[in-house]
Image 1 (tube, rainbow, N blue to C red):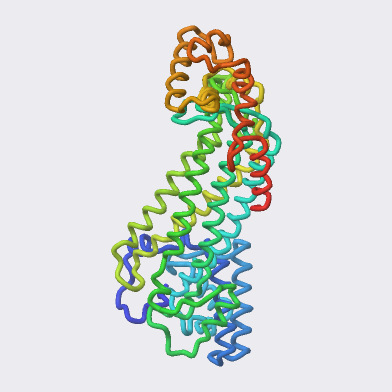
Image 2: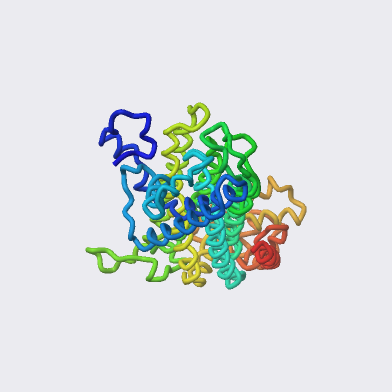
Length: 456
């Protein structure tokens, strides 16, 4: 089979080279975008008089027919035709004859592939943003149900202070909000049109690049043809935002794994998001959040892989850049799949409020409030801090939590203690007293929920 570019060559391509350099095995995912871009290109060729209206209509009809046949699985992609662009062009020539060869007038595979990836990433970024909203909605719904639910808050994975469970969940809402905003902002760079830049220097044909950009829904046209064909910043930016998002998903997944363990028993994940053991019949394994933790690594790897490919490339296009697609596809699919599982998993998880309440009743996480109590009585905080440390040590030595101590025991450490210390130490009061903006009090959490609803 003769190559569409073979006029200059006297030998056939080595079969191993052909197999290793072809990208059709993965870039066939761009068939929709490639034909969408080609139709816009044909419209422009007709409007500028480069093609006749009749020619443009025949090519457009041929392209639409080819797309339908691809979707029905009636056409077989060929390694000999290397990539999605040349495969589609060959299908078009088979469909409408030599006229199909005019499709490539005024463009190169270099600006064509860049356009395809811009279109692909634009469409999928918008879809991923919708997936994020679904996860945020699930988090927000759980938060609304658990403003009054209290669990231990942790630092260093040691119990620190009691917090509202809604407050804890909403921390992830705001992480996802930043993820969403990063992707929304990245669309500014994704929404640029490289088409018409040619191989690297533009073209001698009187193309109207702005017409093509407008038809394809792009916001602007690359002002430099060399930058247009060699820029992959928009993919790197997407992958960077994706990596940060997967880090957030992994952190939440880690908490779901911990909370659902026998040791914590703070939540129970729905059976539909867990699996069993092939040997231990009692097991209910949180496989989905575990897998989400692991998938973070592949997204990081895709980012580092592309950064490494691009770091030493001279302008403009180089064959190295063929390695930009598989990581992008994998990152998109990983994000869409991960977010797609996360939303219903959060939505269906059962919260064990009584276990959380018991946990905050059997620790020393209310110790800071004793220090604050003494400060309101006039004691300097540093002195109060030392006194509370001694009280906690006393409690540990005597097998007592702070609420178990008698008033006489408190007074051994300071005469400032009064009966009202027990009201101060109640977990519900500890949480309610955190009324500073962004704090965990029910009052502040309810305000935060209103902000979250506006953000959605």
